[in-house]
Image (cartoon, rainbow, N blue to C red; front, side, top):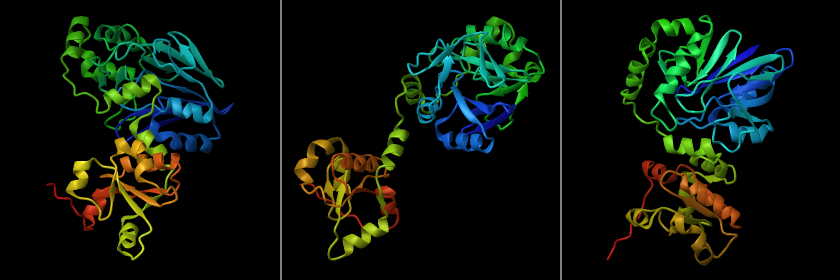
Length: 347
């Protein structure tokens, strides 16, 4: 078996598992920022990815499953209780996923979410967010249930072979893996092996909510796009102009660029690049025909941080303004670099 554990900066763990004999592979819990990493690892080992699997509906990071599956043309696997409409293969407790000559057994472990499952291999178990190193998955997010987590742990997962290595869905302290035996001996949450005490513990943890909770649940459940995805896709459709280049051009006798500020009007009035036109991003499509009369004009779009302007420049290109570009870095970088702004005085 070929086995790679891939970690993000925020401690999310995903796993590339391959069969040496057949070169077939599966990725468990793929994360949106690591797609190129997975492809590089697979190529390095001569593997062909056959499946993508999410151990549950993630609430704290963005799954790569839908976009990655579309890119490489493979099925997405989740538990049958998943509400995601884009799942191709729905599995349940006790079933086996065959990857080459490897056999991956599914154990349904609800509690963190209703669709949580663990993946069992001969010498290890991928526990998702059901069991972490020194902790367990939380139960206070949508479809979480401490009673169910108790059963999943004490009447299921923890009864497996104690020598099995535990590879969790999160590893915030870079410990890599544990074992069932070690977690039984050292995990403080598992010391509460009485149901009532365990449930009370889980209900009183008072954990902070994940940063991207609403967006992660929305995109992971629906297959919709994250804001970062939209910006990234827009950035692939436009080119950029450096602040130094813009400054040189507006200082020249023939600037040959039109500056377009897409921030809100009050921000524009407080300070903008000299000669810029104001069309707030929310009004761009409706006002472009009246105010941007020359589709061949080179338009440099800017906002405060360079993100909204990237979306706006891509929109303009889609509308036929083929020379629309975005200011690299946005007005914040312009300001920090000491370039001048002008303001409009209100009457």
